[in-house]
Length: 221
Image 1: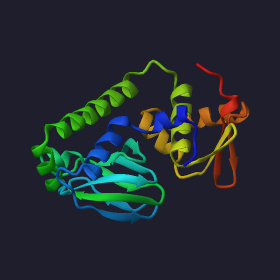
Image 2: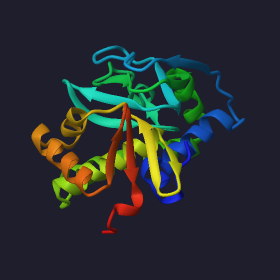
Image 3: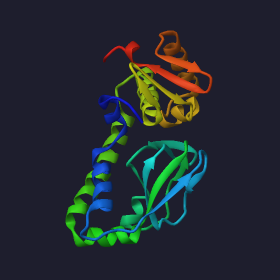
Image 4: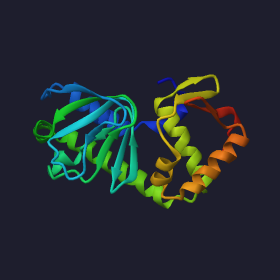
């Protein structure tokens, strides 16, 4: 993925990148891991399934869903199954690959042992969980308009898996207006109206199966 730093910061979590680095590179208690691959639309884990592994996204985009409602999109360096580290209860959500996805697969039990040896890792995990709560709260309580929220989400999703050239970001369309409506908890027709508005303004352009965002046409807020 080639995006500028300001956009990339919207798509990545420093805390989760730091936690990944701690788990995979810290030598105080080396962890075994496996690299696994999924094709688009494959289920990675499903709701009510026991969680014995934690996954880290190496590449691609994963959708998190609960009761058929989209609750998150996860990209590079973000974690799947963090609850398995703490209580090892069944997962309350389903994770689906939206693109080709490569994951690190690590035993949740091994991670628990590593965290028990050094409290430093527990501190990073707490930061990860707190940031996720903060992001969810911000999304659900935002004062932004539907137009702003939809555009922010489209730009984020395009940047997570797209290629940037000058002031444009282009990606093969792997997400739909219905996914965005579910994620933002607004109506499908509202999202379609926003798509049409930004097409007319030259911000959003469809080219075959690709979506192109013209960043130079977005007015700074």
